[in-house]
Image (tube, rainbow, N blue to C red; front, top):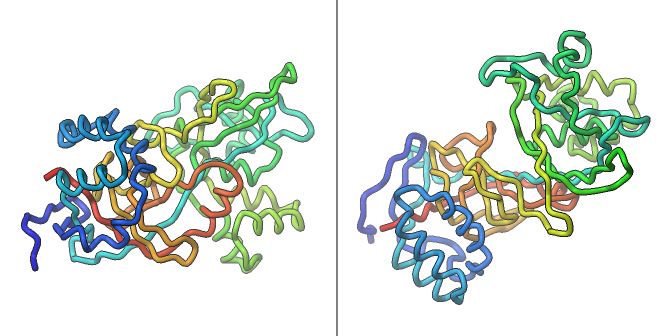
Length: 336
C-alpha cells in the first residue's frame, strides 16, 4: 500500500516516503545511545528542526520506547535513492588516530605536522608533498609552523587522510599531555592513495596500514618515493583538551563533536547536516541496523546512498575502519 506523502528531491538524491515497517531492525535499536549525538546536532539546528529539537531535548532522559513512539509520531521515514531510483550504495568507515608525538624534533620523532603556512588560500594549489620536502622556498614558507613531530611517516599519512587525531605529546619540559589536532586546510593538491600505488605496481597484496608498514620495513629506501606518490598535504590546528577528561570525538563539518557509532559523513547534496538517518548494512565486516546522525562530510563521500561511519578513536577503531567497505541502505527521518 502506498504511503501518504510526496517524495522529496534533493540535488543528488530522491527521498520516497515509506512505512516504518520497511526499516530493517527498527524495533531493536537502543535509541538512547543515539540521543547524545542528536542533542549535539540540535545545538546547531536548521529551521526545519527548530520545533522538533525542543522536544528531542525534553526526551533525553525518557525510556527507549517513549523515544521510539515520539519519533514515529513526529517524523516520516524516507527511503534514500539516486535520482534514478537506485536505493543501494556504499558504506565505509573512518576513525581518529591516537598517536605519540614530541613537541621538539629528535632522532626518533622527526616527521613534522604543520599549521597552515602564511598566505595559504583555499582553492589555489600550493606546493606538493615532494616540493615541500625538496624546495627551499616551500621549506621557508613552513619555518616555525611545525606543531609537533611523529616518529612514523605512515602514521603521519594516516593522520592526513583522517583529518584529525588525538596526540599524546611529550612537551619540551618532559611533561606528557593529550591534545587534539584538527583539520585546518590542505595544499589543494589531489589525493592519491599510497595503498593503490603499491597495488598498481604489484608490490603488495595487502594494502592495509599494517601491510604498508610491513612493506616499508623491508624497503626503507623507498619511503620518500611512496609518500611522494600522494601530493596532498593536510595542515592542522591544535585544540587543548581538559586534563583527566575523556575527550569527545572530533568536530565534524556540521560544527558539532562526532559520536562513535552514531555519526556519519554524507554527501550534503543528498542529505542535509543534522538529519537523523536509519542505516542498514548486512556486513560482512559489521552488520548494522541503527539510528545515526549526518554530521560530517568528506571529499570521497559523494553520491546519494553513500556514508562514512565514524567508529571512534585509537588502534582498534582504525582496524575496523580499514576493513569496512560494504553495501548500504539509508532512510532519512524528517519532520512531518
